[in-house]
Amino acid sequence: MGIISTIKRKSLPEIAKVVSINSAQSLHHFLANSDWSVNKLKQRRLNKLKKQLHGRAITLVIDETGDRKKGKKTDYVARQYLGSVGEIDNGIVSVNAYGVYANITFPLIVKVFKPKGTLKESDKYKTKIELASEIITELMESGFNIELVLADSLYGESSQFIRKIDIT
Image 1 (tube, rainbow, N blue to C red):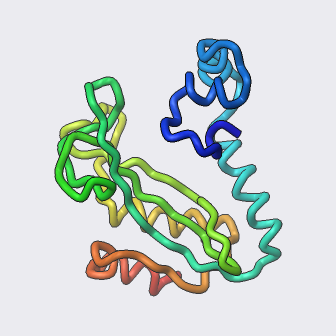
Image 2 (image 1 turned 180 degrees about the vertical axis):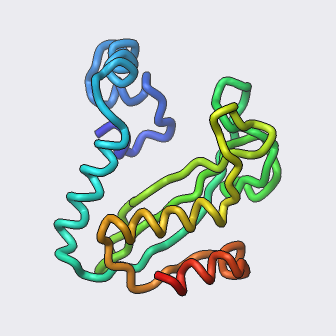
């Protein structure tokens, strides 16, 4: 409830206040130490969406967003173009997929863009086009019926991306 609330800053202390938890620290421990799998939770959420759609076609919207970040504690922060501020600044960028059905928009998959200078040893560099292509593949393989893909000119001008959506 705290994440979808109208509070301006979605920090753990603010979320704790909104959901009447006395200690933001206990909320942090719950999130950080719970025995849960992000991938299983993501798959469960996508399965529920698919079930509600009953095989009906959706429009897939591919978009990227960037948010300013101060400091160096968050992984993959670098000086890069941030769509939310319309300029190059220190921040993090993600490629996002949203489904649209009957004028209802719902989040599907998010992948963090990892600039070359921020990669960890286990990471492989992927362009935003490659991330968006992976998202489409994942959604198709998991059974989503995609009727139309909408994306901005970064994707629309990429022959690699156009080939990807022509295949699907």
